[in-house]
Picture 1 (tube, rainbow, N blue to C red):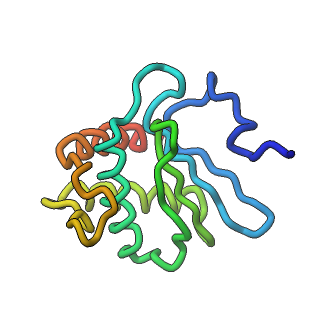
Picture 2 (cartoon, rainbow, N blue to C red):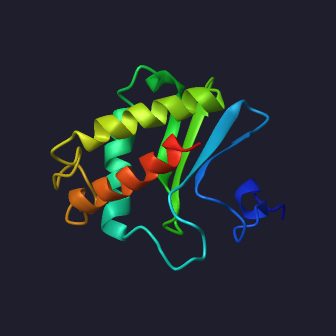
Amino acid sequence: MNKIPSFQKNHDTLSLGLHAQTDNNGITTFDLRFKKPNAGDYISPKALHTVEHLLATVLRNSERKNDIVYFGPMGCRTGFYLLTVRLTFQEALSLLKSCITAALALDEVPGSKREECGNYLEHDLAEAKDELKKYLTVLENL
């Protein structure tokens, strides 16, 4: 079997930040790397789940909502994947900065009621916001 693109990257040298790869179908996968891989510091499951709810909601309600294909967490808990169409790197970077800022202004976790979420008890808004603030600093320095 062929190795998928994300497994072809050397995770020991992968840096924090935003990495992009476009496939033959015009879908760009943005690797939102919040944590350095294999460094022992990972996003907690509750914060990971909450960031997913926050950013998925804000991205899918943004002015570029029709360009968002998917947003979700990495199983390794070091970041998230954002799949898009028609977004350049700079456009995605700008969108992420504005959407993270909007997510930080939310006072509750969207879609976190029992009837809306398959694991509604596993959320931590304060920790998710802390992770988003740290990542926004990373993006501001790109």
